[in-house]
Image 1 (tube, one colour):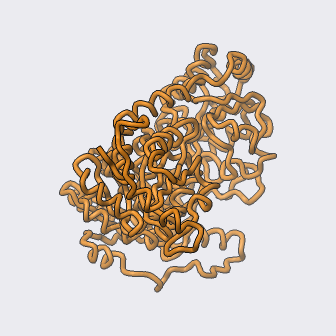
Image 2 (spheres, one colour):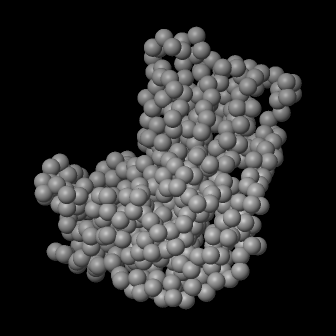
Image 3 (cartoon, one colour):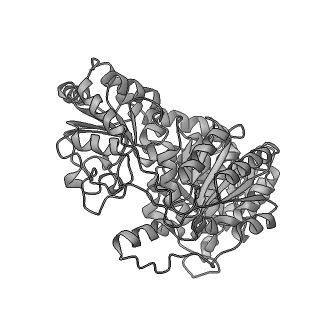
Length: 568
């Protein structure tokens, strides 16, 4: 039986367990869309409003499930529109397969219409990419793509397929082609990749440092979630009686209401997390990469502590902070091995100090109005419950969410960390909701970010996605204004959005999304109650929350200062 390259692609995706693909059609990929139509009972295609949000939606699907997200775009501008989303996934270790069409092989390299070297462009921001130059190789390329995206440190890959390869035919049942076993092959290979990669001596050395310490702390990152090691992390923290500080990507890896949790660490971290790092005699970094947003001044970060760094990616070890003991391996397996070597610890005096720092709460800084971000976030959490998945764009609202939302479960917080991609949220929220139909999904966004992705309201309405959108509207690019106020002599140049944007309620109505405007606590609670009712009917809802333009994210340490030298 003969299959075209386009059919082989779709069948290989299905064989590897794909059930959803996010994309936008174009001439170079119409063969794929023709096959997707024929297979629509086995794999669904979600039409977005812009290719960038196809990548973000695949990202949100992947982050919220642990599966591999898939996005599709045509050649030229369609392919380049995926780049920001691919880079976002790369920095935050999200498994994603980007599929692009291209001009036919004879036209490659000739500046043909809508031709671009997308493989060359994406080389620094993918784990691997392929240009499929032979239809005989296409099935195996797809199998490899799933394997590489998920193995080791997860990340995006890209498959670029010339148009003539999509139209070429192949007789199945020969040359090893079967279209049905790809997923099984990939899973077996993935099991081999996940084998133990560290020695017993590595574990013994780490256990020795832990046993010698009296003021240990755990700095946990997104690797805990990727590895599925949240239960093991909890056992380790309770065994060692050690506080757990979380990176932005680590939110949800450890319950926020656990007595050992100190919350966010770093630039905008809690007093308890940052003082713990500066006063600890041992920092156990679990699936975290010591980014500049955590350490700020590397020389001053945890200067008096020994460092144990556990990460699946050997390239991260000793890249930013020099470790005393390092273990390159799957975090879940490493912690399981460590638990067998460690006795329980008391550390009563250390925990008393931690609890004192935890009592030093972040100031609320109420200003001209009485609608504060903490109130908005806390009330939303109460209304949506513990199963909610929370998505953010990037800006002040992102940090307020990390600081104030009571995260308890892994994969419940989706946000662009390393890239800081404004406009990430709406696509990611759509992807998360499609993958988690039984979980409430909320998007916290800012007026600046929302203007970058508001067209995706069409996607929410088209597919009946009941997502709650909450816009923190302060008529400014809030984080930049805050920096201009603190470090640029209050020269607020080109950060004001006042009189420079749409009426968000009217805009939402144009997309058939019910919107509410809230200016105080009473009107917000009323809007939230009505929005929850709308969500229950299977429709999205939007709340525009008017907050003061000078409401700040605190703390904000000066550049180059130690982590605990915070401006409140």
